[in-house]
Length: 446
Image (tube, rainbow, N blue to C red; front, top):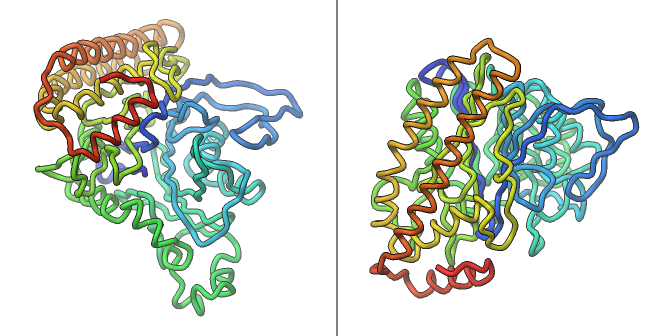
């Protein structure tokens, strides 16, 4: 389960493109932040993706990627040109392949090879048509799916939806979101050859007149299990209701959303963009990203932790600035040297001891601290507009490092306080048992 959102310049406060994504994964699957500079590659060189090896290109671009720890590719990321991509699991009537490129591999390959959103779309569909999608997206059991994407740059955005080697693409007009379901129906801007003819041959429709991509190719049962329709409706409502005033802070709020007031993490009845796992919900938001895509010094905000509702977004710049090395640490077991697991332990204590009360106290401190991060990051951005060289990189990296240290100092401070709190809101038994087993598997004592 994931949600990806975008607002074009005709719908944002400052005329820029603003992108956002929550990556939802297994509760014990750390999601790490990886940075790769622009690199040149030798003729004949290959690149080993998660499951298959393919030819490398002569040059790959600078990228920052939010990745499940065991996967070569990424759930979301951005490159030096301000191309940002998020992918979603979707289930189709087409067969699934035992091996091939994961949607996350396709995402990273496109970011490394494309200077624009349109070119990134082209990279993905060419790779799909040549190598196919395939392989399990879970390290513990077989999980097969196809992929949809929002691909954005500082000028435009596209929605790309795939079913094995078949695909359709729609150019975004103002605001758009996707979830774990197909959203393109009777109208599109680009499509793979033979798309409609294949559906007719399969008996999914009679002719072009009654063809609907989502209706013909989508697996409605799996979409229902993923609760995709409710989350998609919620994200689109948030975008539409705020057209003209969407900014980075508001996109962060969207990604922290629990479907309105009165949300209870133990009942999980509402469509919620910030996902919390439990007996009936297998995915937990494992990382979150907001991209402020401009033609100048674009600025990116990563919450490299679960539960964005109780997380801070850290500023990240491109142009050789990089990210703290510590953010690349983390696997499937608790580790004190992994920032992801440091926050995760705090999040689990809050849930087990009383989310409604404790999360509110944490959020009250998050808001002014997040505001401080925003002020510092945009102040440094203004100072460095048009600058280059080591002085620029050093100044911007100092801001990233300072915000990172401040965030994780707070997480440890809050964890010490929560550890001393008496649990007054014991979760329902099924919920308690679910998290007891997750904590045991991860080696966390909360």
